[in-house]
Image (cartoon, helix red, strand yellow):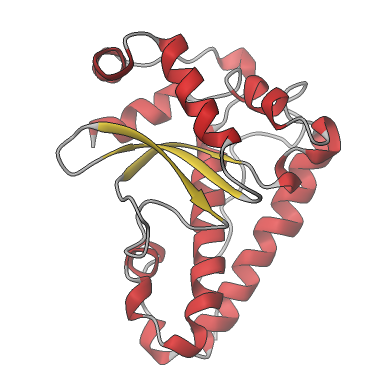
Length: 208
């Protein structure tokens, strides 16, 4: 039986996000951590007929419906696969110099007044995640923007998430995402992150 889920190839090389994220971190993060989530998710799906044939979005958005005996494993590993796939597509080499489109910029300005305030609020959410987790910019059901943090590999699409919304931007604040280069300096990692965001991708997500 073929694996239900696979990793997409990265849209850039492991070293292409230097100096903001180092090559070694990217290689370990993609080939070990992300790959591990995919492997564990495939094991859970293979052993759970109720999950077979479902898309990753279907699984992530319906964690409450996953059989209880595998729910935690699926929550952690489906979340890990979804979050990392989303994260890689959010990033781009700094030389790309992408920018927000007019609609996304207008929405950010309406909510946060200026980009500096938005970045400050986003960084605050990311530094405020205790231990491991993620910070997200989301669009809610009414089209409003919000910034939220989630623990572990949870994300705002999950029906078990305290706050829900469509993710537009996300940052991984697990230590494995930055520790080789930044050690315990999460704030420095977050500062670097803003140099490698693919705003074209974020703008496209906002438009959908």
